[in-house]
Length: 73
Image 1 (cartoon, rainbow, N blue to C red):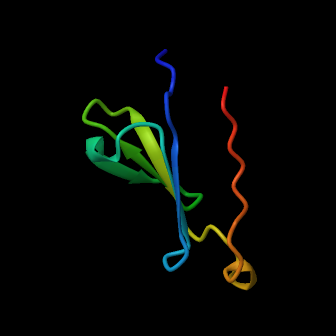
Image 2: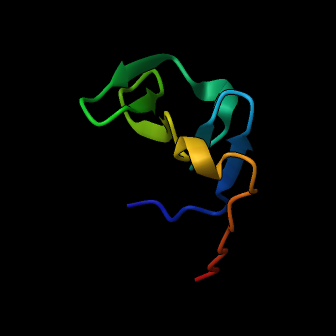
């Protein structure tokens, strides 16, 4: 299994979504939505290269910016 070199995390306050990329977003080829309001982003080979969490923050918490914890292994 190939190690992830870089993870990109993007919070969209207007859309209230959180995107997490394990690979280059330009490689996105197809998406698949799960029942948990998560969209899996896949490359041409069907590998998950990222995901998007819909409705990331509850209504009352949208005014606050979410805390982000970065862990480097």
